[in-house]
Amino acid sequence: MTRIKICGITNKKDALAAAGLGIDMLGFVFYEKSKRYVKPSVVCDIASDIPPAMGRVGIFVDEERESVLKTAIDGCLNMLQFHGDETPEYCASMRGEYKVIKAFRIKDRQSLKTINDYDVDYYLLDTYDKSEKGGTGTLFDWKIIQDFEFLKPVIISGGITPDNVGKAIRELAPYGVDVSTGVETSPGIKDHSLMKKFVENARKM
Image (cartoon, rainbow, N blue to C red):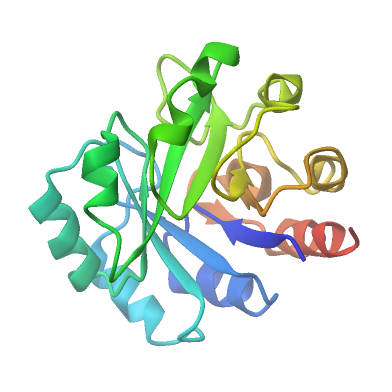
């Protein structure tokens, strides 16, 4: 079954609604320039009310290693996602206590050149945008990744919505799908009916 990650969670109400749908991972953004930035103390409070086995993913962008590890403790995280220009060595050094996701912004076939250099747990493929590190709400061309041999399980992100998640799963057969903008009323505020529809459509596959 395809795993489901709902990202950009900023409050307990949305987190509990998402968790109640039986998803696999919740994503919390610790990049202060993001419209979906959330404090570690808020995330740790949320963590106390969701199933312990659920992925609590912290999203970081080019953050110092020590800062990431402190936030991971303060935020009660069990997974780390790196969405910047982090090196393979940096990402590999984080594995062990935490599952690690490395995100790649897909523009063209060249975007895949170094992916398999990363010894992490999962690859997340998002849409390239020169002005945004993520949360663009736009699709990348899925043909770019067809027939490419990934060495790690792949999570598809970037413009995934309740209406196209089924197509994404059928065509790409990913390990997981990731949604943020596609189930929001505004940045960081989730529409619970859209989350429910997203999960239902993903689970049909």
